Length: 59
Image 1 (tube, helix red, strand yellow):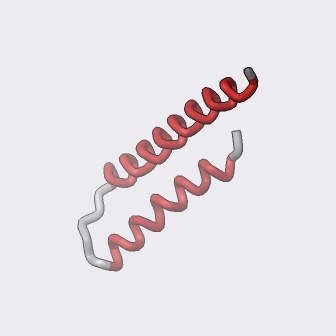
Image 2: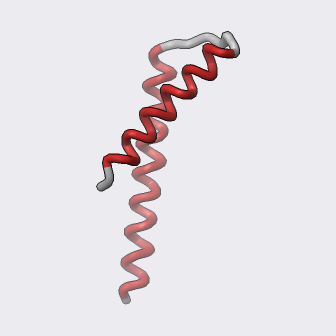
Image 3: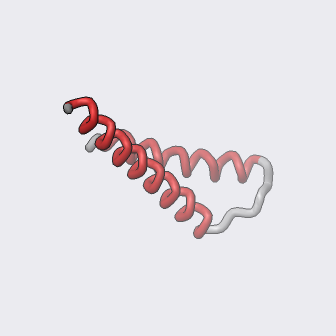
């Protein structure tokens, strides 16, 4: 698995907090954790679907 995807998820969470602070929105630590978990969850779903599609193409 590529480390760049994981780094991109963390960087996007940091950027979202920077944009929220720019617009003076409330910031809480659990929102940062939630953004990370959602990003990792979506990445996992994409990996599972990609694996299933690769298996179908090999047949």
